[in-house]
Length: 160
Image 1: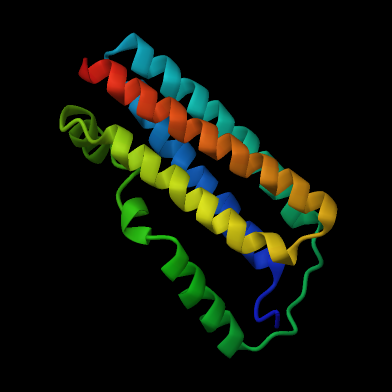
Image 2 (image 1 turned 120 degrees about the horizontal axis):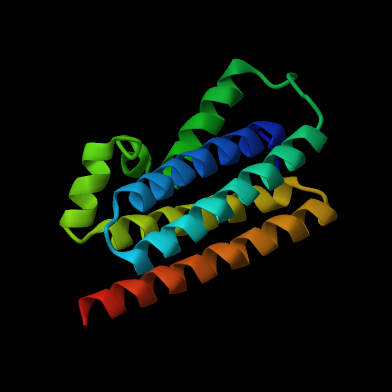
């Protein structure tokens, strides 16, 4: 497999996506009036903090390689943008957006979508990592799967 972009760039993008998800979860926690929902989203906020730290450490351990051309940088950005549906992230830091998501009862579907995007992104990233870093990212993938189960369970319980 030809490497057309650096793993460091992909790790930096992963850090940014984790920060965006963390911001969304923190805002849901802040605006929610349901104690169980608030507790779940507080937990998810803390998980995203840990993921930011993990990906920052991975990023910082990767070589700074600027040898690829601008064409490859554009290719990388286009490809990774197609992997992650950025429309999900365009307004998530807005309190109005989060409040509409909570009151419209689609906050769980949005959060599940964020977690699925994280899994897809992380899987695309795996081939560019050392074996040790692959194990870390695989654990993060398993955590994201657990988050999906928790979100789906909470959504179901609140609908009853």
